[in-house]
Image (cartoon, rainbow, N blue to C red):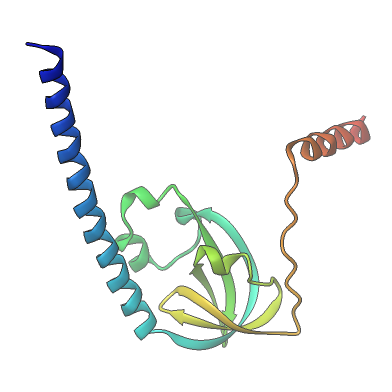
Length: 153
């Protein structure tokens, strides 16, 4: 078989794979938009006092048992943005969106748009200054570790 025939077969297979991925991506994007619309339709504005926020594993987050059963198994060991907040008399663990998680102030009262246990957006802050987290470089982290080690000795 000539080389050009092998390359032509490989090219046809690659084109088929790319076409399949394109249509699969469109289908998944449509599904995500539908889910997003359902979340926004069921959203309520809630006033809450944020106690703590962390990126932690879903197993350790103290989420309700029903939520744990419905979550796919691949998410059990992945870290998610979890917010512990006092809503009324109850302390609840909520899941925040990635974009919203960095904006949430700790130990402050906020009004947020919540759908179930999912924080969609923040409406307003009450007496809370939100400072963007400082990003440290690799060398700064090394210097800090070195300083900590010298203090211990």
